[in-house]
Image (cartoon, rainbow, N blue to C red; front, side):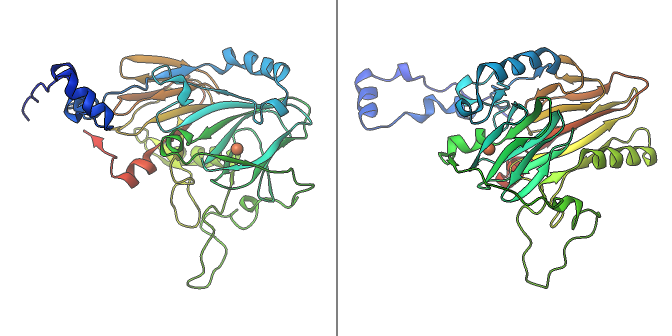
Length: 351
Ligand SMILES: [Fe+2]
């Protein structure tokens, strides 16, 4: 590898030449080449960051008093990465996290949009999401998917505010000029049958029978119960070597692919006192503490995370996850943009 030569700056060009380029919508690309192609490592804007649920929860409850649902469509406090422009409404360059709150009796309007969305339920009993006509109950920790262009609304039949983490890929869709929403009418009623995760996809390894050539739905299962994920992590931990990380991924039961096309969702358990060093890679990562307490080290920064806290790690970061408790396990859900990067040919791991 050789040192890259210093390139000409734009102010080294004659003003009249620059003016002529401007008038014709041209730019001397060599003056910006290092901005888009920095030598050796990407110019990272997104930073490692941490949000404390305990600290921000009062602000979310205050939003319930300050903004009625009809003035919000979705009452969400977005987690904005301090290194990214605020107008991008992005937690990482490809991923949005934001806390949504719905009050008892409220209905969030039916709509559908290009960005894919998922919910991780934080607190409150009795909330639900409908996707098309399927009613998905939202128990604490559940992962609920609303794939692109699927009608969905939210309701709440409980007695206390319900809170969940919204996860969206609009940071990818907006720069492509494809992000939009269609708002529809609320349906009068929904199919009250158990969702397919509790029926035809309730047994791992079994899927609905199809004749050769018959296609499975693109998004067959939209709710992943946390109780089952936690049980699977616990069972796996019991039979895994102590130095082996326990890490399971959510997948489309029909083809094993990521549950949404742009984002990977996976779950980890850190056994009491356990420390796990992650592979250094190009993915943008967000960690959501589901249960327990973790210390998340990202490059030179350390975040002490409690239950429901969120932390980010930028591309190519050195990441270490540590369970702060020597007595209880810590469960973490990880969201990253690996599927997008793999499809684009961008993904890489460093030794
Ligand atoms: Fe939505």
